[in-house]
Length: 70
Image 1 (tube, rainbow, N blue to C red):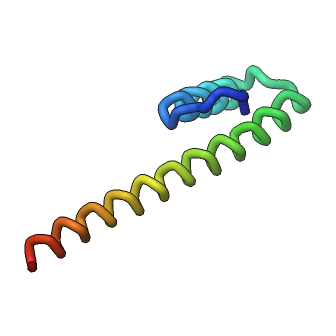
Image 2: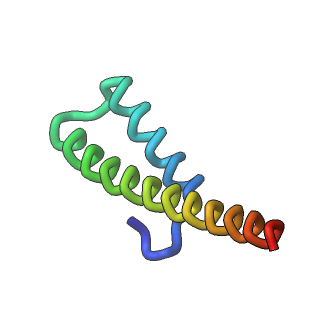
């Protein structure tokens, strides 16, 4: 992945591009392997972003709920 901090939206866009190239049979076997490796990295990146966002949202909701109870 690039040195700059990539956003979730950018990663999804790159992943969609890879999927489109695979579905259209644009890639030879060497390119396919490289693209699949990149796709795996992008999926892991996106999964991590989603997990972190989910965790933060749950923390905020729990904090709000605890504040209402007090």
